[in-house]
Image 1: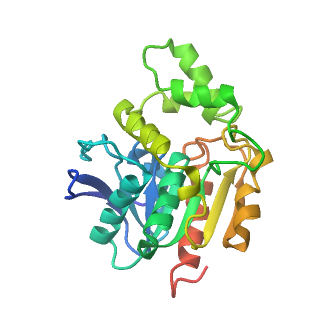
Image 2: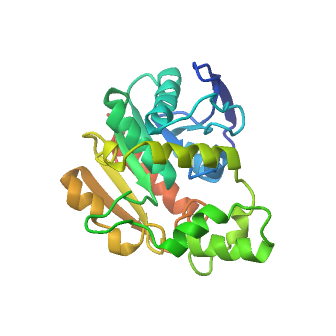
Length: 273
């Protein structure tokens, strides 16, 4: 693992500053975290990727670190605009963007609303957002666990049960996600989803997509594993990581870093595979 240090920058916007954590040198990728969680979820992965010659840019979502909460309601286009502001400030060309869980919706929103800002996206443990013929793509018990697991008023054992159900494969330790939740960010993001129809960002514009799936994911289960590829065609490439649920990043950091490194190199001219 590399000792490459994290450099923190702040980007001014009309809705207040956005903090971004930058690590490494080489071809770049922007990494977006899950619902109500921050850029530090990627710390182990960015260290691994820096050691493989990849530069990572991790914006903090609004309400986390130095990223200010906006003084108005946000929709998915607004969340996407924040990422475009980061790309314009930190990248010399259109970006590669990888979004974990809820971050996959933000990545797809950037590609849909601001196509010139992005040339490819990776979806990491990603729900498709909708499933043909089904009222909801989510198991009600599982999605309830997603929303309640961050409630610090609940007993520890109940939170661990909810984290295990929603995010972690059997045998993996859910206690690593007892911390790192940001209620205000989570509320803002959930509201943005309600303000934006899934169809507005479902297709992710026209960019190529890496669909990096977790084999034991209960939020995005295997029965839905071909929804994006079926609807979007050969733009979508599927890779599967075993031994992981919806959390994926803390469960299989090396496998995630390797997959994203291969993808970034394949999408970066002159980098090979």
